[in-house]
Image (tube, rainbow, N blue to C red; front, side):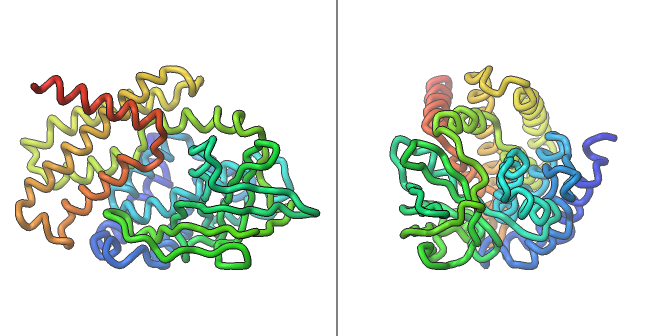
Length: 349
């Protein structure tokens, strides 16, 4: 079976063409509706990387990338809300703790949607969220700067650093409760529709049986760092959607270049040793960003003055592209990206 013929890829295309893309400009201004999330739940896409024994599909990585491209290109806000779900699923899949049996099935079957609150761990040694242990519970205190999907997610995977310098992850109901208070939804230049808030944690008490992962911080960081070196499939999805708005005589060469970069980036993503070829991964990531910016700029130029309307697809894709430049950014990826931009400037002088 080819990737294009995989049932989940077909469902992603059906969802994108029939619902997400036609409504994308409205959603961009009004917010991701619950009906979009219900459609994603029914599609089976939330179980994409979940074990078959728990109701998931255990799909190959290539299928996961293809569906991400399709959904991001159709409606980046909806893609961003649902993509959070896959990290909690993978965390539970690798967990030997009791919460696995309670939540993995409902998450794999799309009965529940999960969000994530752990990117702040990457700011270490600064620790925005601390966890201490009391009798039978873990107590979280601090601030989660970003949480996406508030009001749409059923549960969230919350992380903090313990007194023993461990990274600890636990599942919490995604609702206001004693010790957990959300901010007002943030107004952002792009993806305001994703319902992103910050979370104030003031002694949030989480039962020990809700803990999904606990390990020394440096051990967790060593597995997390390589992830930000690979190119996000959403970058290719946005670029493809933008090139669809450009006349073929101008888009053809860019599309060929996009396919070449994609092939190299995905080959590295499939490399069995994730911490090898670091410089090449970061360089390809920067190349993909540059081509995405070119594609979205071409779409805006093609649209002319009409592209400045909030109802025009080109400006939405351009703003979503700006968001992807910083989504999942680390100090390492930022430095590599800035160096690439400086090099490109020198090359054209």
